[in-house]
Length: 185
Image (tube, rainbow, N blue to C red; front, side, top):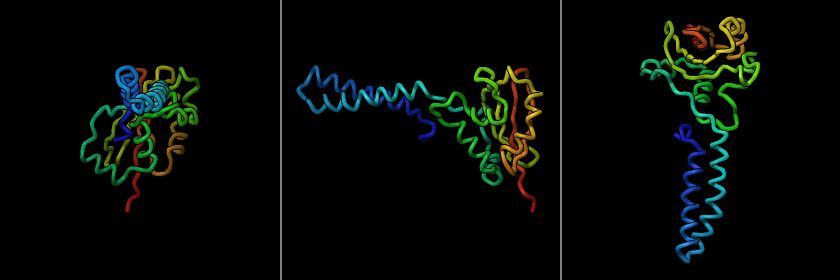
């Protein structure tokens, strides 16, 4: 729940309410306690909310809702890396330029801030009985060939138990699929 709540909006709302109460107490009542509380708590919360709002990175939306069957498959097969990526990109982040920016830089897929691919959506699906997390990137500056050259490096980077596939469903769009490779009994 808190992952889906903007701390910037929360700070702006509470700080704004306290500030308005403080102003009202200052101009219309003789209640010094409300006045002080409104100013001493309201103004810092308001400024903190503004700062968080300026540094806010919104969660990436699911492009297709996850089915109950895929949720069950996620619980059985998803790796720690897949879960971490899904949780990181679907919550508010602060002080980052883009989701997965450090990972993309490490993989050599982010030459500059302007050329960095931007994740626009994600979805969870089943591929041949395995759980798969599909990251949908807008990648106008990096062609499919560059992504394919980095495919082995991505497989190593995203860790054991994950197979990486790269595809281009349409011009300037890249889908990075992280497929769980569960151990066979």
